[in-house]
Image 1: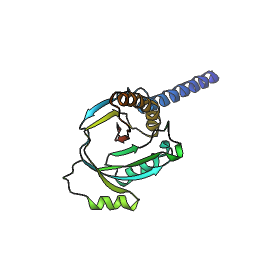
Image 2: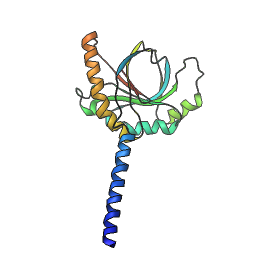
Image 3: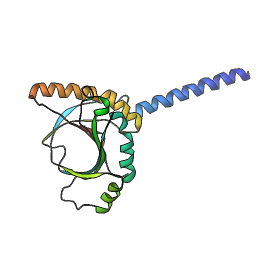
Image 4: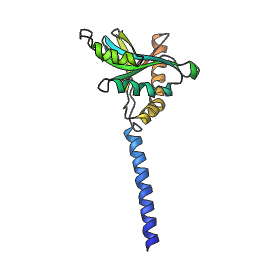
Length: 183
């Protein structure tokens, strides 16, 4: 009788483990539907603190952690400059940081910028974009970044390829702002 109970408890624990891992994958975006679209005037002038880096895009996580640790209440973003299908992983360029303000008229928080500068971040203001290719994907941890790479990039690549063929654009940058990828 005791052996039957142990087998039952073991099976129950394995099922709980599978449900927990499966639930975490779903929470991280496994079943999230990726929709890509072109939007007008998505981003106005906005000021950011950022760090530039080179290397595989999958290694940018520590910069997100660093930016978030300086100012946990701010939106984080990344800009991916190169197509990983065409550029060697060690040569890929990207920057990661936090959005300081999306209002160009807002006064600068010099103390906050000094905190970012202590960790090697620089400040820049991006101009307003007329059009942007956008998509969203939840960011609920490191697994979300991995799933976004698998699910979002193929959809973006397909959409951009069709758009470029239709509009004859020559270069596209990928920007990721608080869960929203902007092209």
